[in-house]
Amino acid sequence: MKLFTSFALLTTASLAAGQLIRLGYPTDGAVLTAGQDATVQVIQPENLASCIQVGIALAVNNCDSNGVCPDPAQELGSVLYAGPWDATIPLPGGWYQNFTVQIPEYMDKGKAIFTLTHLCLLGGAPFPYLEFKNASVTIA
Image 1 (cartoon, rainbow, N blue to C red):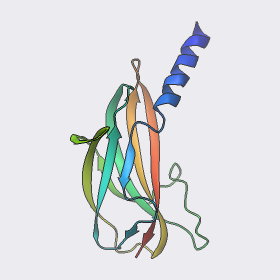
Image 2: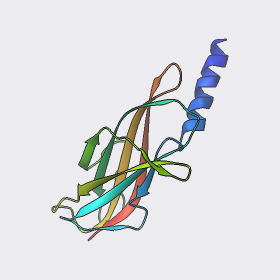
Image 3: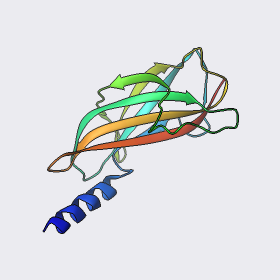
């Protein structure tokens, strides 16, 4: 029975992975200007997973001179927003919420990684589920 419960839990987690939240903007290749506002779109697709929202964080981090970006699970960089979210504006296949953030003036120009971090409590007997969605961007 314990093996079945573990299998069911892993199956639920794998089905939910990649389906609980998406980064609508910025997308790969977007150009963000240091010192300027940017509109970030967070999308919650329709899914069957039961997820109690805890919150999100939006962050941007410069990559090194070789173009290697830090792993967001280890280092987020400059946190632009951290808190609750409520995707209530309908989209075909889901909902979204926009956030206006300011890209820090001190950001180095060049390649960077923009990260959406999402935490929710997943399933009927909830367990913490943490996911990262990234976009490779350029800071101008």
